[in-house]
Image (cartoon, rainbow, N blue to C red):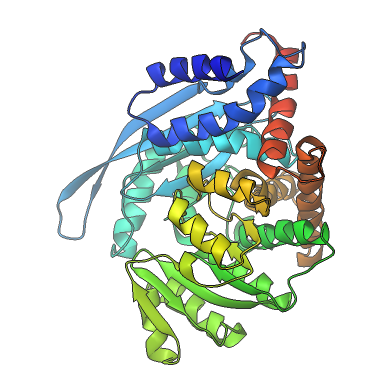
Length: 447
């Protein structure tokens, strides 16, 4: 089996040199899915996984725009349309200086399996730009978004490819992108998700990824007759996902003690309560401030510059910042400090060695493609509401989100439960997502 996996990965590496994040994501899936393929004749010999890791379409384009000083700036735009076997391409847009083909292909590949896990009819895609929205004026961000959409609009549509937000793309950016699409196409359609409530958005969509991450952790805890009540929780990040993961965690009776950004993390031993979280939300969402400012408002907390919060003692960890933020040393610290639940709110936040450490320790560990699927699931619900021209209540959307996350958890158990009773959620998520996509691809022929 090792030789089969190695042969597959050698071919993928040969075709995708200099793309470490993409290769990391593929290898993590190959290690669990290839043994399953070999054991099932319906998939064996069809090169299904090889077809899955090859994008159906890769778009790259220049994005020229004019900054506030009158200088012409040129960024790069991307859209990876990875797989449309079970529905139109669906996945976010990321605006961040680190954006490149490797990162977007990894995200698109993960998105294919994640979307399949939701059971909603959505294929997988991802896109974005190396544009950095930090410290840009609203006018600069608007001009960039309009230029970006003036090319992207040719390739997307409500039945073709439906982008959403991601890092660096929030409600403001979605609004500018949607406005330009509407102008260019002269139509009002649900081509983007994450829209404002007054023009086609869905209740719970901003909260969905963070809430879903916590709901999945809650389902894992229930397998051990446990709950969030009284638990100490560390969270990384302080953006959308981290904020709402913290909100739901607090509602469930746990104590959140950390949040972070690219500069470092804050540790509040007393706990980040609802009032303190509201301060963080205002700081990050309205004032575009840094998490270090938290200690000025709450001096009993401390700020640790240049580090991540994984050395803080906790029961539950929710990595909600970005890819590869948890390395092997971090994993060892978490385990040594008694952490027994990890639910990923970010995409692939744990390096492979860290994942193996969690699995070896037999803790409750959920990979992002399962635990953070709540965001895209609610995007799918937004698409449904747009198609029906209706708006569901907050309670309806939240109920549907809970049910989707519960079903994802059940599917992970179906394919991930081992003979000794331990549930390998990585294996379960990978195989459950693969089976749905593979069955559709087989039915549609070699296309």
